[in-house]
Length: 467
Image 1 (spheres, rainbow, N blue to C red):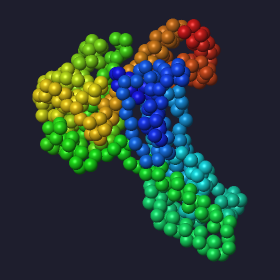
Image 2 (image 1 turned 60 degrees about the vertical axis):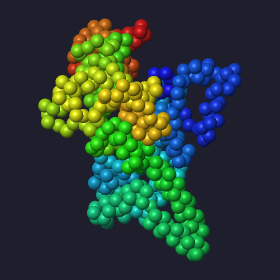
Image 3 (image 1 turned 135 degrees about the vertical axis):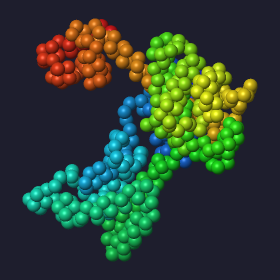
Image 4 (image 1 turned 90 degrees about the vertical axis):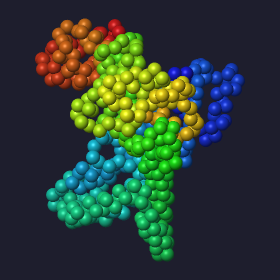
């Protein structure tokens, strides 16, 4: 649900959408204060269709964490669904369940919603591929004698060379193929095992394999399918041609760059540029701007400044220009962006503006805005890019505002100058973080004695109470 400005204020899920929406517009006497306030602010609503309830659960969690809507009380914390982590960075990769997806070169699969099934699946897969289950140490002869995994036959002891590293890594590669959804061959083997155990009257083993089959099918089935496909509907060739037709573009549209501006109470005027390549965000190419040359409330000139700075730099560095430029706003924002491109002699780059209120598209040389169906994948795609630029700008504005407030408060503390302010900000992030820190850690970060650090910390605690 969005308010009149287009900002997302509530995210929910429903098995039957019609009933869920209708429930908000019945007898208001049944509502609590929060729901009454929500309904009074709702201006429009969007929806995304998922294939399963598990997908809806994961999607709801992702969107709430991304947009932090004011009327969503739950899922704003750090609770996350589990992933399967394959630690390919290790010399002997291991497999584990984790709730933290880190930006490293390890492989992550998920997220998954059923932890019990996930544990059962991992246990079976590690046994099936005979992968290590230890904490990755190279034991001596004495420790190896007591290795339980080796004794019960679920690990071939690559740590002492019983299996070559090449063979072990090949097994890890096969496991990753299964986790990517290519599990048909494994399931075929498992069915054969179950039938053989049943024929040998080993019903306990047959039941175990049967449960593992169900676990693999349940966990690696729909959850993996959702994770591997695009978050928003991908374009068909027909839709791609439709997009180029309405924008008047003849060539391919592989690289799109979008701009948005943000300011707070006339201060901290900032902006962002996000870059999408072949339908997906290229986050390493995102750029953030501190606006310097214009009144911070004039978002038209803010757009003009950002567009000029961005493409002047690309020209100077002889880097590839985008196939399409998008700005958040209407006709005036579009005109200002075109002025910057004109001054750089880049009028050949297609430009568009997407206005929030009615989701209208403004194009150069066209007096009236263009409206396309609200459920069009093309419009959804443009909205995704626009919303990502907005999220990036708002996040940067809050970060700048937070730093300024943090520094202004620390200026009141005797013995904390600009250099120490920066060190405290980078190390502890918040006043609460400083208050809870070990004085020895503060002393080390500021290169001062422990008594001085303790005095600074005490002053900050007193400052927090006053503010």
